[in-house]
Image (cartoon, rainbow, N blue to C red; front, side, top):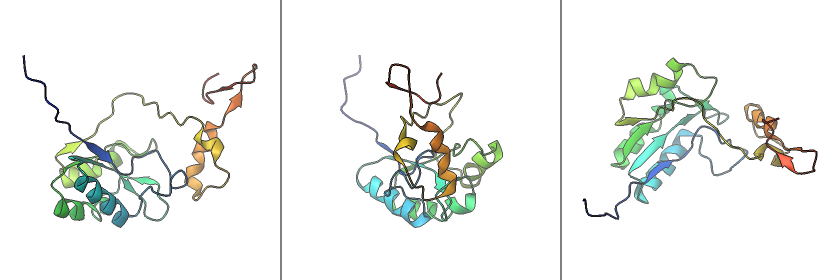
Length: 158
């Protein structure tokens, strides 16, 4: 039997695809901010950087390789972290859009989610009164609705 090890591998996703600028002022969506936070994560110990791109104008997810090109060279130059590009991004993106950056940049790793995903928003939309960008308002569908007994239930379940 192998001797137990205390070694760990830390992965950091500095943007992810689901959160929005309104939900967190710390969410980087401009390429320079994505690069800065990714480099900081690597310096703090992240061995793998799981990277998504965002439209620099409104923070919406994008698979556009030209946006990835604005932050990947900086990260590669300043870290030795393994680059893990997403093949996700948005439910509205085509397979071709999801694969474009990975095919262009040939990273060490790519993510690939098979099947359905449960992005549990836990009623985050109900906490927002004013959205920074119109595209974020899809979260309004995640508002709490009371059950007959007065408790709240998940908004997407009957």
